[in-house]
Image (cartoon, rainbow, N blue to C red):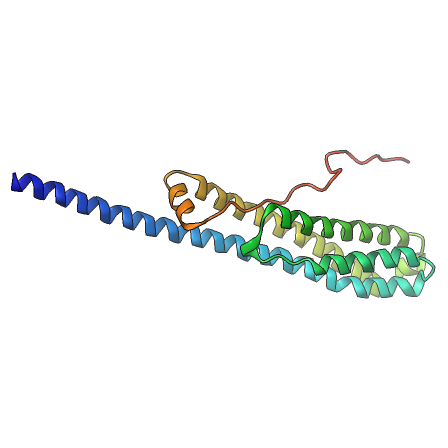
Length: 197
């Protein structure tokens, strides 16, 4: 009887030690994944900030050639101001805050698109070396933004899968690990653009 009780107690102790070890290991993996998501979010924000920093130089260069395009220039400056006012702490990243951030950045992208379309009417501006360099930097930044958003999406996917899989989901629930939001397509992105010649 004592021998059976000791065996049951030993098995129980081994199970408890294993469960605690599993819980600690799983929690640490979730912390690592969550920090990877937060780090990647910072990289996304850095690229948006880089774009915002380029805009005043671009606007001033265009202003010298196209001063009567004041409405377009003001729209870019206004959209930039709005986009730079919205910041998100990675710890508080949720669907709603990401949507507001994405909308502000989308407005800025549209305003920049209008500005670059206006510049097509100014051959001297299009030949200006400073403008060409700024335009190339802006295009490079847009590519970096796309790359960092893709990497963010990948990190979020790994994190979200991890916290939803059983038995890690139990630990995630106990420790307060919440699902992270993904970027969504901008409104109207599902429609193919109409091309007219």
